[in-house]
Image 1 (cartoon, rainbow, N blue to C red):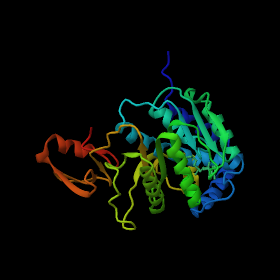
Image 2: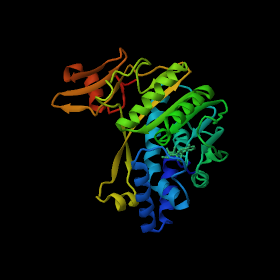
Image 3: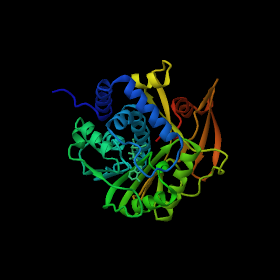
Amino acid sequence: MNDPVQPAEALRRSLAELLDGLPPTQAAGAVERLIAAYRGDTPTHAPILRDRADVAAYAAYRMPATFEAVRSALAAFADAVPGWVPGSHVDVGGGTGAATWAVTDTWAGERPVTVLDWAEPALALGRELAAANPALRSARWQRARIGTALELEPVDLLTVSYVLNELAEPDRAALVDAAAEAARSVVIVEAGTPAGYARVIEARDRLIRAGFRVAAPCPHSAACPIVPGSDWCHFAARVGRSSLHRRVKGGSLAYEDEKFSYVAATRLPAEPAPARVVRRPQIRKGQVLLDLCERDEALRRTTVTKRHGDLYRAARDTDWGADWPPR
Ligand SMILES: C[S@@+](CC[C@H](N)C(=O)[O-])C[C@H]1O[C@@H](n2cnc3c(N)ncnc32)[C@H](O)[C@@H]1O
């Protein structure tokens, strides 16, 4: 029997097929419209993804990157709750469903899945793409508006990826409060920009006030040690570039790095990392410089040298975003 296709590969194939079916100039035009719509970072009062051309362009252009960012965040969360598998998942502002694919890639198997979004064309395409993922066979794709009237059913895992930036402050607060009320674990992912980080911190504080503990990326649930305005906590996920990316952005690189900020918070017993690597490690002759966020609520640079033996070898292999020391 052939091995089943893993979710990441099945998504890549489905998006490649979708892209093949799009007239090239129309796809590039739709992407440019979307880039302009998203550039403002402004809350919107009506869906940006208005029709099939918009959502197909969004899926082909952005979904591989949002999928990889969410997958990285979920991997860090999974490390902090070893042995736990979500029994149900709700993806709020789920659009074409990138996070549902990332959840099935992190924890194999079928579970009740609900995707909520106000853009019907996004839900329709999400449902179509999900046909290639057996674990999403019975997912529900439901129209819902995020706001103070949003009602959520109790759920194990709730994801909100690349959505907070489209919401005004009262709706962001209402969404995080509703998530804290309904879910045992909440994973929020935003763009890895100063504004994205600020929205993640705002949500993190709200979740902690609601009784959650941070499982990742932070080693603790105290205040973030970054002085506001001086820096921003973010990570990078590698994403293969499609022909559409090359058409829109030019250049010939086979990949790009998607920068993202995130928080994974839970009511479950969790074991956060002792420390996390918060910048790309600098490898020098005989030493590795690691910028760490540590459990005692401090940011520190550590130098690991050859004298540290196994730890030095681990430092050479570690990466931005990883636990330190490796578990
Ligand atoms: C940038 S897309 C992200 C989609 C998906 N979560 C991902 O990571 O690829 C933002 C999504 O949020 C949805 N959205 C924005 N404001 C909303 C609102 N007030 N109610 C429901 N959905 C909303 C949009 O329709 C869109 O699908």
